[in-house]
Structure formats: structure tokens, C-alpha cells
Length: 83
Image (cartoon, rainbow, N blue to C red):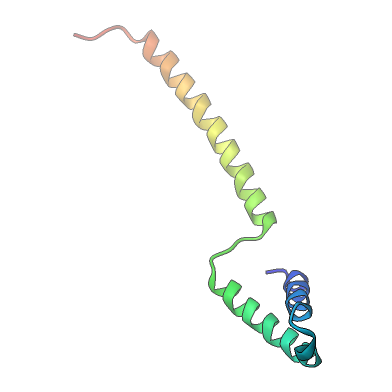
């Protein structure tokens, strides 16, 4: 996970608490960050970069599959009919 994103989210959460509790803002921010990191760490998430790489791999695989299906259809059409 992107630590900068988590820190920003924790800061936003801490700043959204009522004014009377904001004296504890630094403490809240640390606790929010720890909770977010722990919660998100348990999820099976991938980075955007990993997702994009896998999307490109999948697209190339689909293209190869379509080419192979076309080639197979061509070969099958050349084969004499069997009874």
C-alpha cells in the first residue's frame, strides 16, 4: 500500500473529528494510520501498476487465443469431412 495515501487518509480522518477532540489529533492520526495499514494489509489488494501489468498480459493472451482459434478454424475447414 502507498504509505503516503494512508497517511493522507489518516490525517483527513483525524481532522474530521469534533473540535473538542482535536487536541488529540496527532494521537488519533497515528491510531487511524495504524488501523488503516492493518486493515488494508489484510486485504488481498494489488497496486495500480500490478493491475495494469496484468491487464496488458491478459489482453495479449486474449489476442493470442483469438489468433489460435482462427488458425484452428482454418485448419478444420481444410480437413476433408469424415463420416
